[in-house]
Image 1 (cartoon, helix red, strand yellow):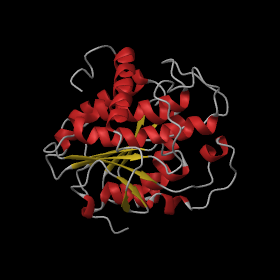
Image 2: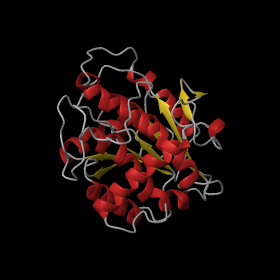
Image 3: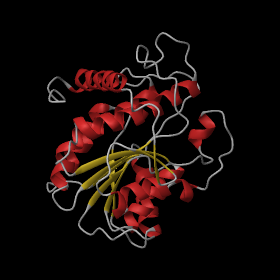
Image 4: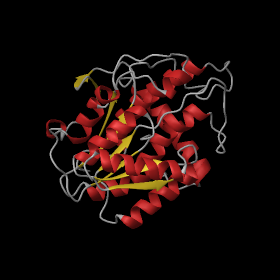
Length: 288
């Protein structure tokens, strides 16, 4: 409501079909961004675009058709984005999330929660880095990684529950720990000082949603609009323009208990980089 208007600026928001994602998309569109939304189901995507455009008072909202559980699909999406917006992109909100009671493997041979909640975040940041750095020339660019306080149990030797018995909640918590760690690393490795791009993670809130139900919980505590406040604050508020590599809860910079372990953060980054290169071919992340 109070964010400055951003005409001529371009944003990509993932996971806008979810409850929190819809509110984030509305807020970004209301702030005046050309707002692109990812969706793998084209009909559902078109309905979502119409909904967000109307809800934001006629905002410029577009569909970017693709599947976040497929790295080749992500690569095609970013290629399309680069063709349509050669001047760059000013905002990426990584918000898409999956939760599955049983272990599901994607076409990239990744456990689904890890694939969507971690690897897609990583690969979108990597593939969009040139677009974000180009876009940052006009007043900076931002990446917001929606993580969670519900985080922990990450095993760097078994990221995808290949050795351990799969547990949906443990797997989800591990992905959110990974998102927080990856954010800290991206702030120095991918978007160093001088790049003009900031990257921060946040805990949104706990809302009643398909995601929550997938974790075996029926009821959240927050409204979706309340849960979207911190991601939107990081996306649009002038007060955090230069802040990077941090973790926010309720709009406050909060010490992250995971991101201080530089060795673990580096190991996670290397694992994600190896997957990125395995699926998309070598060299695509070699400079990282």
